[in-house]
Image 1 (cartoon, rainbow, N blue to C red):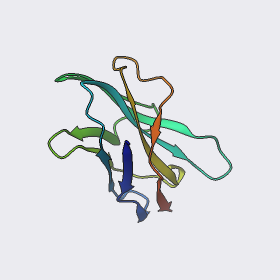
Image 2 (image 1 turned 90 degrees about the horizontal axis):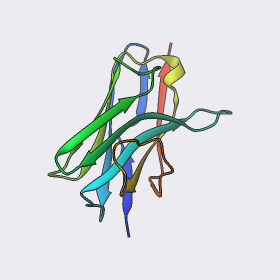
Image 3 (image 1 turned 45 degrees about the vertical axis):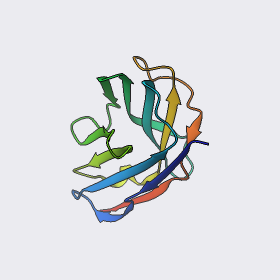
Length: 125
């Protein structure tokens, strides 16, 4: 059974940085999408960044609100997905989730089957 476990959340002041990690178990397809999503209180869940892979070829996408500040990456050696978040803003406050979907890669605007439990990120002004 596929398992995803996020870590690295916490509280930080505006302008600070955090690095989220998502440990992935039993998910090793050659073709996949993985992504980070977030849900703020009273708001719908939204996509933050995705990475699609076809073997060694990867394609990353970031939402406009985080471009230039957040970077998604994956370390296949230790099967971990990362989200480096810099220049954090109070509006980045949310629960952040990682997700995975096999068999798609170029367009990760898709439904994701596997989800983690989430990690809280709080940015104070």
